[in-house]
Length: 276
Image 1 (cartoon, rainbow, N blue to C red):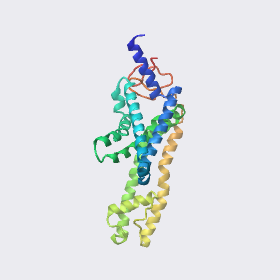
Image 2: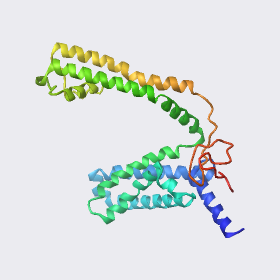
Image 3: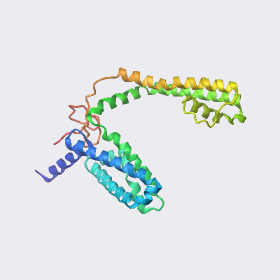
Image 4: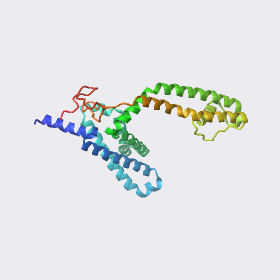
């Protein structure tokens, strides 16, 4: 076997382990990566507690360096294992991986950048990539398609809610006035949105009988409004229940995912999916 072929096979096997979850090695890699991500996020949270950080600072710092080095190795391995590294580097998860890794290195070069370590919480977003196991693919694709198909209806609904909030906020400004806390129309609109979404901070409240009547109507209206987006997506989801014959196969050339079970070539770049 030639050196070039050995190198190609090595890259393909590394790609299969890192980017896919159909093989035992790929599932094990995803499981270990998931545990490391959760551990790193716990470290970030513990470092934010001053009493814990003062007592266990050295341990937390060393642990974070170990995690950072592991993620650095993983990041480099992902770049090496595909033929077009820029496809991964400039992808959504590629940017997330980079942003969640570099803060620790920046803290060595620049004073006062330790606060950037909070960005490491972005590693949690990587869990969505790990949870691409076969048993989740059908449900995730169906939900994504339902949300995509419902986007226009939801956009119209949100636009209507915004108009209603502006109208009711303006009415409350006229009814209550500055003496009740409704000092301007934007503040009144803020109150209306908070009330309409049933959040109810309580920082502004109507005091006149008419204002309280309008507020009661807004509260009741809020319960109905909350159910509308859920109903839209649920109806679309029910209409689109179908078998999704896709797997975790990732293209070793461009890193595209979501291929059919029996696909031989990548739907995006046309490269052979499995050359081993």
